Image (cartoon, rainbow, N blue to C red; front, side):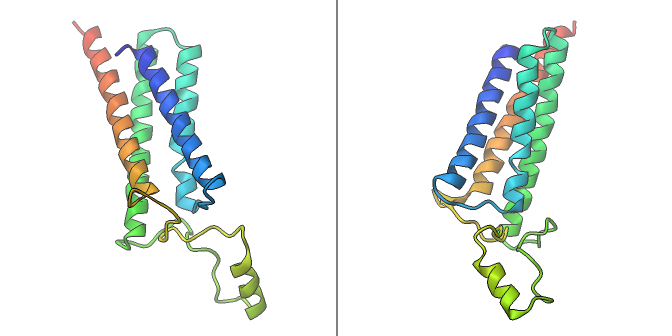
Length: 164
């Protein structure tokens, strides 16, 4: 697959994934936790990079580098999603400040107000929605891993064609 077509596919996949995340939030009412929000960042960065590749970079070497960078970004995204799955499964605690506000110093009235707040982020270990029985972090890990592999594979294959 040519580098330009791969960049276009990565851009489309990144925008579609971000769109699905926003749709699940705004149409289905699934509130994202802190880790869920962090997991959107690799898609946004990859979308910007591949858009820049399609508009600005004409040389194959520059395009290959962008795809290699996207591969690393998606690998980091897959690792973050795996970390979130571990938090959901209680394999380890979250270090991202998930779980709301500390309640030790709150008065009963402040605690009630915090619990009644519709804007409070949900705890990272309690996913609001499941898709086909799996939390969205699991699906994100799968998609991120596939995109990491795909970007890396195409960049590597393009590099092999350049070397004699």
